[in-house]
Figure (cartoon, rainbow, N blue to C red):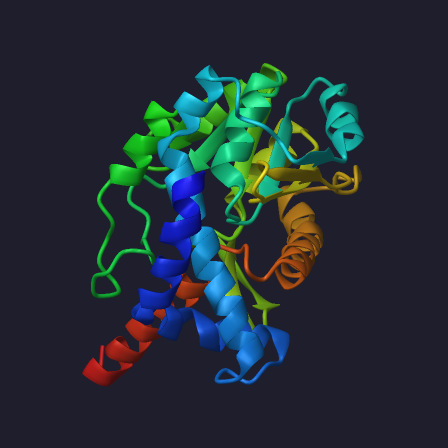
Length: 286
């Protein structure tokens, strides 16, 4: 997109609030000086990637109709194919990276439609408003118009729809780094601790489906999609054991992916927002 070459650097140079939220966490995770040139350069690339990804979401349908929705590379397809052959569906697990939306649309066109589990009202770190406010469902509507197949956690039939999708032998996608609302477990992560959701692993255990880690990066020629080897097929005796064994494995994979591509992880600024909210709560005595 030619316009993004102009808009993305301008956005990165003027998004002062997001820079202040994201840069300390990028620096801490990579052992950099928050005020040093490396941290500033990474933060600038992070913001530019955000602008490009948001602009791309607006034109996914048009690009597909024109036959211009491409993938820069697809790695680890053999892992996905082997998991699908088991006939129990596949749960793909990933973090929020800037290639996610384009990757979902590309995979659907390539014969791998994915049901994404989403929050209808996520906290949005990329709007110029006071941290802590809930984002309106504008972006969810954009994704819906773009043909992204999704089920919302606010749907009372969300779990039933997930099981139905897996029983049909298809793909269900989980963003593992989403804000945990319940049944969370805290683990060391990026130099601090983070609460990770566990419900998706409980579903995977009872459905008997393989869990395949995934990574979607944003590149100029289209998303780069990587499927990693599925988690161990040893399911253990119960769901709690399965969660305890596999949650740290997924956290370690996600941390490795982020540290390898720090300018592509969406949630740096959201980490800053979470800390700001906690400070306000501590300051107010609540």
